[in-house]
Length: 207
Image (cartoon, rainbow, N blue to C red):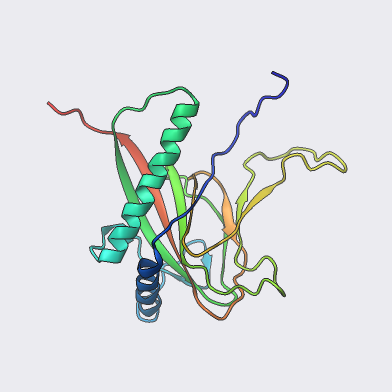
């Protein structure tokens, strides 16, 4: 074997079908909430960061979204286990979720979700980024976790970031430890995204 793809980072992109009505309802609710509920301040510079309680909300649209996200994370994990020839015991999944409403000029600084096994971001409304004048507007950058390497002149073998293009209905799944950030969003319509931290633990055995 002349080439071994060592230490790859698993990233999954899903475009969820049949979500139009759910996306509209979630977007309307969160944009309205952003006008009356104070923002949480974490990695966001500007924008509105909701409380991390979306996974516990009983509203039909929020429940439907979480029930669409969790199987995709499970699918990612199952595929990785299958590729490595490993079997997984029955797992119990924990999830916390929050929203971000970004308006013109808002962005996030580099951060990770290392307290979680997996992180996700879902775009209920990707907004209307001004890609003509600002080609990086609102793009999600996933940062290469390998540091300190000397670049080879004229040859970019692996790159330093992976750019994930926001799209309404798109779900991105990546390891919680992976550093990432969002370029300043430039647009007239609010961008609404939902992020999740997902953890796995071995389910208790039934007696």
